[in-house]
Image (cartoon, rainbow, N blue to C red; front, side, top):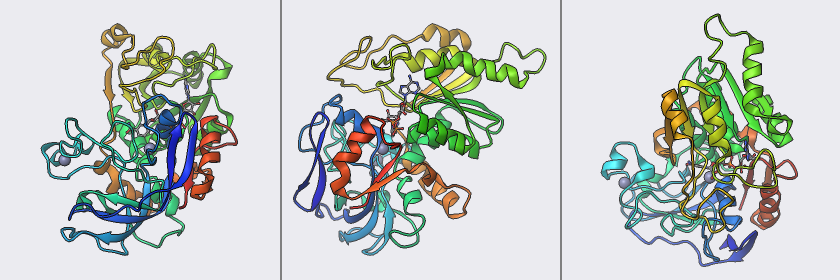
Length: 390
Ligand SMILES: NC(=O)c1ccc[n+]([C@@H]2O[C@H](COP(=O)([O-])OP(=O)(O)OC[C@H]3O[C@@H](n4cnc5c(N)ncnc54)[C@H](O)[C@@H]3O)[C@@H](O)[C@H]2O)c1
Ligand SMILES: [Zn+2]
Ligand SMILES: [Zn+2]
């Protein structure tokens, strides 16, 4: 089968690799119809998080069951399914609690696993024609319709991007009436903003420095804030004051809720050609109001082969804990417990209340992967979210 393979820093190739096959009775193999490229793939592409050359990339697949092992009960060949990024067994204590990204049975010596992801269990990736899905009864989420129909791009975003955006709003406790600032207008930040709006947030600001991405935030109904035009914290405070803060609430001119959808490869605002892994956390510490909440959904890697100034190879950072402490701000971190949200968000799509596919900008075949990775990495050609159709 054809697959997208990490070949070295900023190089992916499209290669023939052995077909994915059933390895356990509880596996299925799916034929992938859509497979999205994610900001997480870029951390590997940039040579930062220790991916080994030869790794088949990709963790956001939608497809059709091709073959099912004898122990699989819930799906059969021909069924259309989306596969959550973080695979899980479905029955260990963490899975039973709905904490599927911390499954205890998918990565010996660790917890949680993902397809095509350095250090996350060695599972082959989904930017390929076929994918082996372990514990298939738990991991296959059925979706209606036919491959290539009008909901293809909506459903593929259920594998990771939409559920991660939603998870960010859960970590940060967004609810109706919330005032929210999202840093990062990639697919994840945009869908965190979109999820906030779906939940009835009163005001949603989205900070980035890429024009097309800021425009998309505006299209979704959020207020774009361009960090190239100055300190986004001051800008958001000014906008909130200009909107008219009630008497007695003037000092609450920040936001109640902050979301980091950037992670450890954040740009330094003073010198955007450089990374500053503390930039977003520092900004959020200043911006979030006393008693507010922060959700960190951008990745902070435990292994960074080339840390930027201020960062460390093991991911240690200097962060303003004292500010969070004195403000009484809660901070939630982590990977998405996909399965908590997949079915609910699928049903929001089916009812017509959610159309996350508005953030998909590019399509291609597997052979287009090298060009799409390059453009996405450079935030060029308007690429926000690219979907491969193997
Ligand atoms: N927790 C999870 O389960 C999970 C799942 C998927 C992705 N992620 C992570 O979420 C992050 C975003 O993913 P994506 O696909 O949207 O990636 P992306 O690279 O497309 O988006 C990141 C955006 O952040 C912007 N940015 C950089 N520095 C900034 C700064 N100082 N202030 C504001 N914006 C800044 C960039 O311009 C870019 O638009 C990545 O770190 C990714 O690994 C986490
Ligand atoms: Zn992803
Ligand atoms: Zn489990």
